Structures are given as structure tokens and as C-alpha cells.
Length: 454
Image (cartoon, rainbow, N blue to C red):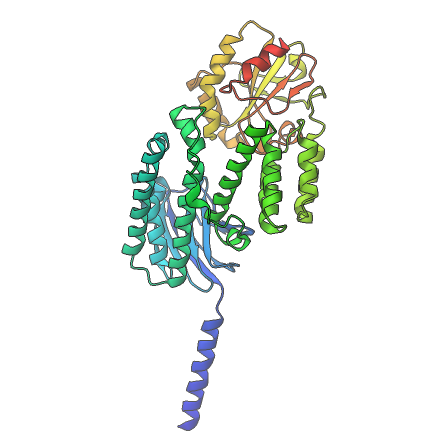
């Protein structure tokens, strides 16, 4: 009997130890009405792709690095999920009503169902145009009212997880500060008051905020957004005050304000991998990053981009293309020699691209009969070829409509180091670059640029 009791005790101890040692998390569930075959869970350096079966089910084990917020992607839809080491989560949703249908069960169901409710509540109650077009006082009144609603929603959730509650309270504070940081720029946009400036003491409530907390930067996407917004605001103010290039002002602000390490490097790298362009500030921008004690792997990537874009300076021969023309056959850059060529690199799924179409059609009509050829190059995937043709017809797109041969990996796209769209390029009559990153059709700068080459 004693041996049996001892064996039972040892088994109990062994079982408890195994439970305590569990660090992996099982994530599973079902997605109805999806055409995707993979979902992705991502945060910082962590990425996990999970296969979606034909019946919409999925399951996998995650060895997450940190407890906290992760982004779950299904195609172009995204939602935030909270994960902890050793705790499992089940997800159920309908792709046709992604945010409205998502529900959670399992160890972290309370936390994640709260996050789903929080997102829907924000969408329902926060009218962004109305909020940011309001006066300074009305904006703060509305924002504080909204913050109280968010705090009440968290309290009403009755979540017992102290780690989550502490984390979420910080997230709400970071999001609140980010909204304040954005006010001046957003107010200019939504109220169309281009010369608007906030009052001198507007940012005083933020003076005790730590904008150099590198630990928070690693663990919180809301904190990342907050400090990116903060330093962007400071850089824009410095750029306007000193009449200097924004890119240089932003990089200098980060270099002076943040200690060497992950946060500074990540912010500089994320900015430069998309924004390092062939212009007058390119050399100095690259030098600032190179001398900032960067991560060697990131430095190599930025150096590769620098070596690509430095040959795209004004007056250099443009990379060429030869793509399918919607009207039949193919069209190359050589076919257009003798005309200035304004190129729009776009895709049918790109919202900002679609918003430029009315402006593009307007300026195309305005410069009709002049030596200006308008070329739109779609980087849609092959399966959306028919969608591309239908959109050309539905939106009555003019100019020369081309379909790139390998979407993002098409040679013209990689030669111009294009990582984001829409992207506009101006080439002169001889096939030389006028601007590798030309103004958008909606910009006030586009007509003076056109007039300078005609």
C-alpha cells in the first residue's frame, strides 16, 4: 500500500512538473468561407504560418517568445490576439464577416473576446473624420470621453488575468497618446486647414511620457506606433522650421533621442527600407544609418537598397519594361521614345491606388495633346488578370494599361526597388529618369513637374 501511495505521489509530482514546464501553445479553430490556404500569426521577429485545411480547420503549436499581443492575418484581414506561453486558444470566424463573427474559446478566451469587442466598439463609436476635424478643445473632450468608455469596457470584462490587465491598461494609454500626437496633422487633413498649428501647451500632458522605453518597444505594437508618431511629429516640425528634408530630420531625431540598440535600429530600418530614394538627401540618410551602430543584417539590406537606388538619380537611363497591353500585344518603354512618360505602378487591391484614379484621369485629360504619355502598370497576381481587365472597363481607365509579368518580382518593379504602391515615376523623351519617385496625381507638385519637362 505504501509503495502504491509513493508511486501515486511520484506520478502526481511528475505530472505537475510537466504541466509547469509547458511553454508551447496550441492555436486551432475554423474559418468558414475562406479562399485562403494559410493564416499567419506575427509579432516583431516572430512569424508562424499555419495551414488551413479544405474544410476551413487549422491547428498548430506555437513556441512564442513573449507573452503579449500578436497579429493574426487571414489574407488581407487582420486582428489582434493575446497569447501566453503554455496557454491554448481556439478561434472561430467567418471570412465574410471577419471582425463581427470572430469568437474565442480555450485558456485565453476572456482576454481575446474582450479584444474583439474592443475593436468593434472602436469602429462603432470613434468617428475619425469628425474627431480630428473638431477644434482642439472639442477633440480633447471627445477623446477623453472615448477613453473612459474603453476603460469601462475593460472593467466590465471581469478578466482575472492580472498580467493581461496590466498590459492592456498600458496599451490603452499608448493608443490614447498616439491619437493626441496625430491631432495636428490629421486636423490639417480633415479640416483642410493646411496652416493649422496646435496651441503651445497642447502637448504638455505628454511631457512625462517615456518615449525611449526600449523594453516596451519590443513588447508592444501600440508603443511602437506611439513613438513612431511622436518622432514623426517632431521631425516634421524640425523640417518645416529649418527648411530641411523630412527624411534627414526624422533620422536625426531618432539618432539623437534613442540609445543604440533594437528600438532605434528597427525604427530607422523600417523607415529606410521603404523611403530611401534617389534624391539629394540619399547619401546623408544612408550615412546617418550606417553610423548609428545598426544591426549588421539590417545594414546589409539597407546597403543593398542604397546600391540599387543610387543609380536611379535624375538624368540616369531608366530601367525598361515590355508588358502585356490591355488593348492587345505588348508595350515597351522603347515604344514610347519621344514622349515624356508618367508611370503609375498600382494594383486592383490597393485602396490608395484606387483613390488616385480620379486625379489621374483629370490630369491626363488636362495634358492631352502634349508630349506626355500616361502608363499604368498593374502588379496584380495572374489569378486577378480578369479582375484587372474588368476594373479598366468599369472605371474607364485611359492611357496605356499594362500588366506586369511577375507582380512584385517583375524586373521593372525590382529595378526601381518598389516596395509600396502606388508609386509614380516620370521619364523624359530620351528614356532618362526625371523622378524615380514622382508626386502623385493628387499632389500640388505634379503640374509644375510636368511643365518643367514640356
